[in-house]
Image 1 (cartoon, rainbow, N blue to C red):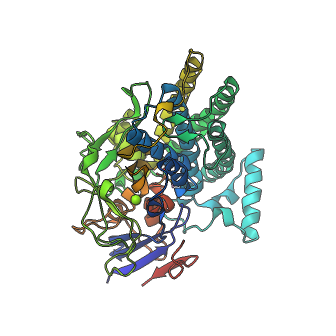
Image 2: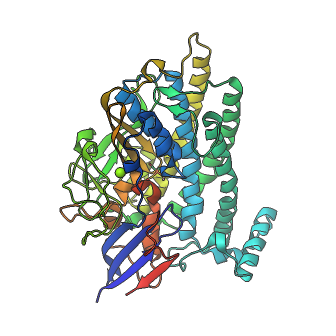
Image 3: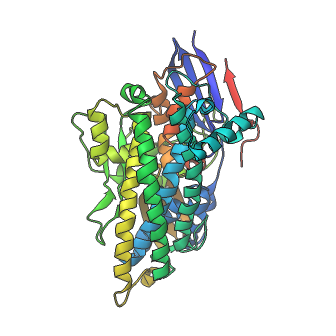
Amino acid sequence: MAKKITIDPVTRIEGHLKIEVEIEGGKVKNAWSSGTMARGFEALLQGKDPRDASFVTSRFCGVCYSVHQLTSARALDAAFGAKVPWGGNLIRNLVMGAQYIYDHPLHFYQLSALDYIDIMAVANYKGRDKDLLAVKDKVVNLVKSKDTYPLTPRYKPDEFSVKDPDIVITAIKHYIDAMKMHAQARNMGAIWGGRTPHYQNIVVGGVTSYPDINQVARFRTMLDEQAKFINEVYIPDVLAFGTGPLWELAKMGLGGGHHNYLSYGALEKDPEGKSLVFPPGVIMGLNPANIKVEPFDPNKITESVKFAWYKENKPVHPYQGEQVFDLNKKEAYSFVKAPRYDGKPMEVGPLARMLVAKNPLVLGLVGKGAKPGAVARHAARAFETKLIVDACYEWSDKLLIEMTKPGFKIHDKEHWDPQAEAMGAGFYEAPRGALGHWIEIKDKRIKNYQAVVPSTWNASPRDEKGVRGQYEESLIGVTVPDPENPINVVRVIRSFDPCLACAIHLVEPKTNQVRKFLIE
Ligand code: NFE
Ligand code: MG
């Protein structure tokens, strides 16, 4: 008989996510992904001055505030007809670069690595490295005093958990080192944005703060340290795990899902945007031997609310979207809407971007037998962090050159006042994937504002046709030999780096227990 397991909330992610799976014969037979927070940002933007949007939408999320500010500014640029000068766009790109450099290593060390290691193995470390012995003492003492908070809650290690004490203790050491790197990466963003979180300088038409040489120099010094950590610690760790102890999981393609991938494309390397760090494109039903990438068409995006707690409506393009809650809807089970591209559920994020780009490193792993899934997602995330680091060097070089030109500009002052009536869309690639904001302006005020964010795509519930979202589909067939220990379920879900705060843009007090883990 099928057994139902509820994991609520899924921890080590941002926000409140409930995952339910039905297990039969040791495998997941069916799955439901629910965002359990109700938020109302899109509705509260109505009637506001459009120029406020980039500051308000920054508050969607405590992790990726900058990406909403930037994407909102791009929607406003489009609606106002503003042309961002290259100097302004370089600074925007450097802000986004700092975001990726912060976000991706954090995801690996703090949010995911503990899914793959048996932390108790540190007690068996026999080496003499002073730093590692200090880590061993620290962890053993925390366990003895039953105070393992930074390393819990955890699931029981399984056959795939890495138990080699040398590998485990090194990973824990890097877990600690990574925290210092995150703090520095936040400072790298604050150099341009004035503070962190919620930058001060990103507005329609560009940015408001002129850079000086000291700022560029400080950014570069920190970038050097980050590049060293990313190239010498983060990427080697991800590869050591992915192609070593976890290679079996990589070959199984654990957590693959629908195998439809979407990238809006982003991050211009030249003033005309002829070359991008991440190219746009769509892959429907991936054939790894022959990857076909179709052009991205923004008109093919719709959102369904069939199974979400919003007033019933047919699937509509975001320009027609609304945010009217209906908590009494019987079949609904999530505050996340269900975005679809050409009617199909899509995966967005690092793996989607690297497949659309036909990245040789990711294709190399696939060529050796890895199937796109949870492990490949971690690898794609690490590889693209290097692309971003390299781009940050290029952008800061270009900014230095740009700054010396007479008439150096960072802002289009000609398009500061809102149009009486206008519409505009902003597209970007956030660390978790394709991000779009859509604005409609009437009487110089916001008439409608809609955001479809990466975790809305990935965490979506079923659509009108009953087709599962990408988290849900990626769980089908996942092995759960012990229903008391659904570690593979969380491995798959966390490989997407969920952010529910973003996905739903107050909390439902009735369902929001601190931690619920239910087996029926
Ligand atoms: Ni709240 Fe975000 C990113 C956006 S959500 S973290 O990256 O947009 O998926
Ligand atoms: Mg939305």
